[in-house]
Image 1: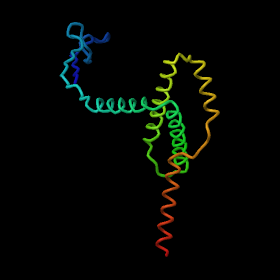
Image 2 (image 1 turned 120 degrees about the horizontal axis):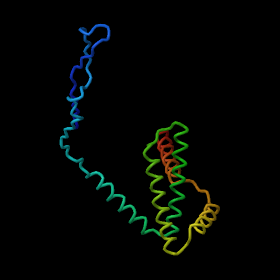
Image 3 (image 1 turned 30 degrees about the vertical axis):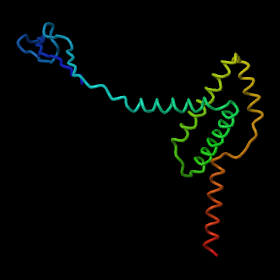
Length: 168
C-alpha cells in the first residue's frame, strides 16, 4: 500500500493596513516543501492457480473440437445457435435459466468457428472466399429443433406419463 506525506508549515502574511497584524495560513513555504514522499509496502502477487486451471480446460476443449470433422463442427454450431435462441426465448418469457450459459455457448461457438477458419487457412482458402462459403452454408441450414427443446419435450412427456400412471 502506498502512503502519501506532505509537510506543511504556517506562513505569515502582513496586511498593508497594519504591519503588526499577521494572518496565518497553512501553505507550503518555499524551503520546507520536500516533495511528495511515497513509501511502498510490498504486496504479494495474487495467485494464478485458477487462471492456470481455466487455461487447461480451454486447451482440452480446443483439442476436443480439433478432433471433430468440419461437418460435425457445422452441426454442433447449428445446435448451439438453436440452444442460444431457446435461452433468449426463455429470458424473454421470464422463465428460469442460467445466465452464464449465454457466454459459455457464445464462446464455444466462437472456438468452433475459429477451428473451422484455421482449417480453411491451411487449405489456402482466402478471407473473401471463406465468407462466400459461409453465406452458402448459412442458406443451406435446415431449421430443426434444438437439442435443448427436444430435452424439454421429453421431460414434459415423462411428466405427463407419470401423471397418467398416478391417475390409473
